[in-house]
Length: 276
Ligand SMILES: Cc1ncc(C[n+]2csc(CCOP(=O)(O)OP(=O)(O)O)c2C)c(N)n1
Ligand SMILES: [Mg+2]
Image (cartoon, rainbow, N blue to C red; front, side, top):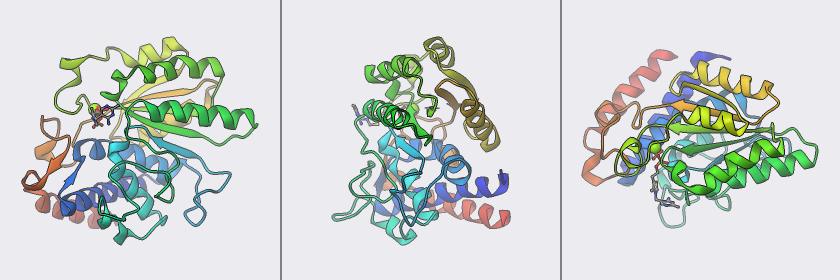
């Protein structure tokens, strides 16, 4: 893996996501920033896709089960050429192809409509199972949130996938410790979630979710296993915007809450230029 390229992609994703949300005046900032590194590994290294042919049969699939973080995924898709970068600034506007939550009927490169927490990951299991039954080896990835893991449907997926032998399926948990308006630990702690997944029959690993090399190695390890993979990404909600990292109120920002974003973007752009 070209580590510098993937790190650049992660930073570019953060820049584009913050830029579109702040210009629009609303967006799920915290959870979009916490998955930027995982998305960069997927689109910068691991996934097979063709921006000119988003429905390419041999592609790998990503179901962003925490669909409210569409901005991070849209950024990766635009950077990789699925649609023009300028289109990112249409987010959430009337007639846009980029609603705040992922929509497979609107956006090139989006394979499942998500936003109702819990449902995406179970659709992803169905997709992985269908591919397996057809004897295909496409990978299906799904990213879930730690607050999302309070949905019973997530646990049905965790229970069923190993029994169906879908080794082409990798679930990544964005374990950023925060949900909509408080800390997961305070509302409904997940406990040792890696161990829980392992006990259910997954090949389960925990990694630093902001270390692209570690994320990539975890995916490789899961792919080499004959079980479905579960990657517990230890992340920080709001990662990359220091004033918003790990603090309450970083879930969705509106209007004045974006104060300070220009300075953050400027610093990120300088950092990106220095990496070239
Ligand atoms: C079924 C359902 N219930 C409630 C919501 C509203 N909602 C959107 S994001 C969110 C919090 C999700 O927390 P988490 O999964 O930890 O996401 P992240 O930290 O990545 O933002 C909630 C409750 C929803 N989208 N779907
Ligand atoms: Mg969370």
